[in-house]
Length: 344
Ligand SMILES: C[S@+](CC[C@H](N)C(=O)[O-])C[C@H]1O[C@@H](n2cnc3c(N)ncnc32)[C@H](O)[C@@H]1O
Image 1 (cartoon, helix red, strand yellow):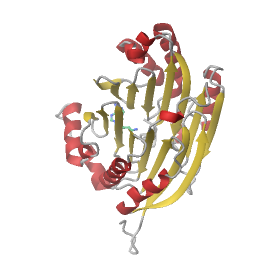
Image 2: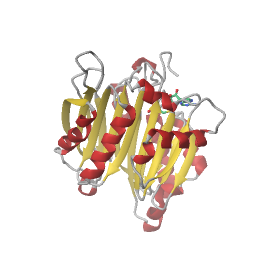
Image 3: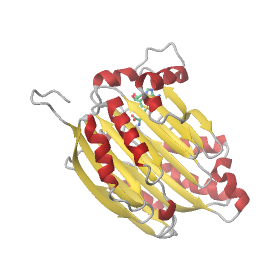
Image 4: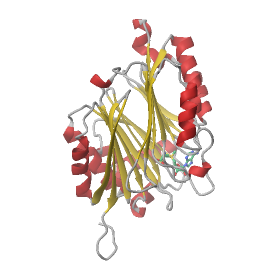
């Protein structure tokens, strides 16, 4: 852990692969054995604490966040002082040597670290991360773009790097990815993510899922949850081929929670319900929402409509286009203060 505290803000990597053999593509990356997964995670400096699978994908809760493995897509999200980008060379080589799969696109995103000075290389700065990505990715991913999307506050920006081998690769059928980062959580609500021990991480995690209302965010999802000692919580939700994930660092002074899910384009009701519920469960002082869509920049209105009734005011909206993933919209909200200084 950093001297100041635990870094909750995650680094997120999404890699897509392609191949010619239909029989390999059926299970694809899911065929990588557990030893291989462990080696990849070791390169990033984290381990598996819990796992679940269905007929579409495998979901792992990690010591530092989550991993999702689909036949041709892998998403790794890690927090703390992990070195996520260092897993890329091994991922590329294992997918190629075991499965004859070739990397076709890469997306890397993160918020602004609370403790940037504690990050090891290549996460020492966004410039270092992009330099590392540029050098590590194959030349075939020639459409590349890196951008820092700003907000009104210098301490909240959204860092995006995308690279793809074909400019028109996936945008047509791409679902909407929603990434929410929350800081300055309501202390009473954050307190529910501490546990005194005496229970397994799985049992304590289950209790937190039920007691906090997290289980109601996606009622039909099968949930794999885990509570750390003395505090901290992670969960992955699986609903058919869709994942959702929540991670909580509840310690006061650097409290942080994240929520991420995929929604099918146009499922406004689901998106509004989820964002509202998440904002109510954590009552953050600051919340950012990043939506990656198939060029639907109007999504920001829906997000604002969902979040503002919970007492958070929209402060900024930034939009940008990326070669691999379409449009990214980055919004920030802060809690409205009453005249007497109390939060709404
Ligand atoms: C892994 S979890 C969730 C991380 C996530 N990125 C988030 O949203 O904060 C981190 C929380 O678990 C606590 N924790 C306790 N033991 C831990 C361990 N062995 N590894 C990682 N975190 C641990 C940390 O202090 C922190 O509160």
